[in-house]
Length: 524
Figure 1: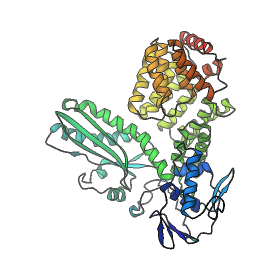
Figure 2: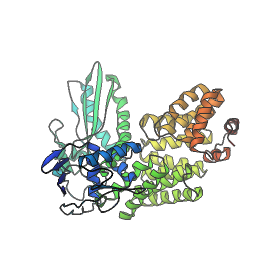
Figure 3: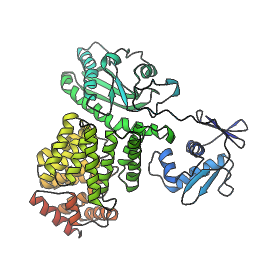
Figure 4: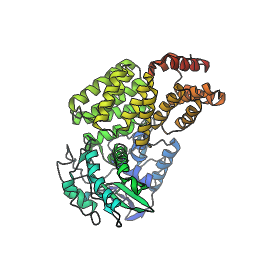
């Protein structure tokens, strides 16, 4: 689409800004900013919306945004005083105010699933296309190794079987996906014939005296790499590692595909969003663990449910944000939010009882309600549906820690960490293992884990406070004070009662240990 204004033309598909037919140099972020403001020229665009769309919600300083605005104005021959094109509305945001000539947009037709209509490969990446879908192609085997041939034949079929447990993902049967030659296939051709958004490919080859398997997940319509990994092992271990490879790939799907879907959805205008677009954007915000992001997540999940009231994962998403409001005390009415978390999880389960995300949300809502037995039952049910669901393993480990079952708690959390080493909840897994080591009086081990937890991306005051407890018990006063002060800066109303309410420990020895440490630190 070409937008014409004043003496300028902005052609989005070519990423070109032209004045009187001559291409104008413009920085990438500035170009995106101009295009976004023109696209939404009928309204004010807030600072948060600009950051979400252009920087994908990453933390940036006000200076970075101001620099992008200045660069955009400079490319247009504008400035902060004249504001002929980009107007600043203080406290509200920015708006493109020049008259624009552009072809009228035709609203995208809503799609309810990936199989409703064929993919228009020529149009580029597919957005707002419903439920994510994936095809596993036959793997290539290089060399004349029987171990390589065995693995190349076994892994695709096992991946399809394992992925079928991921209920939010539509998996193409092997009879269709295996028709494509893994040496000559064209991703766009696969997208067109199988109507899928993602493709899994693999290469198995000799590696020294062993075997190497390289796997990739790519976007089918535009051949963008979404995830990749390489596994190397002894030839005699082929049979043992097959299950671990499948587990790793399926766990990667739980993170990589939703993140990629959210990234693609950010490029859409609002009238192109379907329920799945709203859901994936909501999920991206929910895992940022801030009050503002939690509110944005709730808004996206509500929009998803407006479009599809029977969308189980969107109800689970609403349970997720209500739980976080209760757990992190982001808003008043902790008990009301906890009740809503349970209610939304129930609705999700009524729609689809075999959705692992819904079982996970019910399990942790019941845990925060101090019903550990029921919580473990729901988490076990989620793991029965999908044994590779890292969040269920992690939360089960947390609940078992509360119950005083330290050995199985350690195993469950360790499994979660192995399945999802880049998980947005990884800091929580480390904090749970810190508590586990404290409970078993291994303070050296607790300190090692505490150090990792406080330096993990996304961590917040609870893990930092557990680290302070580990330091206090270890006699490391300087670290204790630093971590305590950091936790209190984020949670000024911290108290022993609130901490023990949030983490309902059952082991009387551990209760005395934790409460005593908190009081010695000066927590009221």
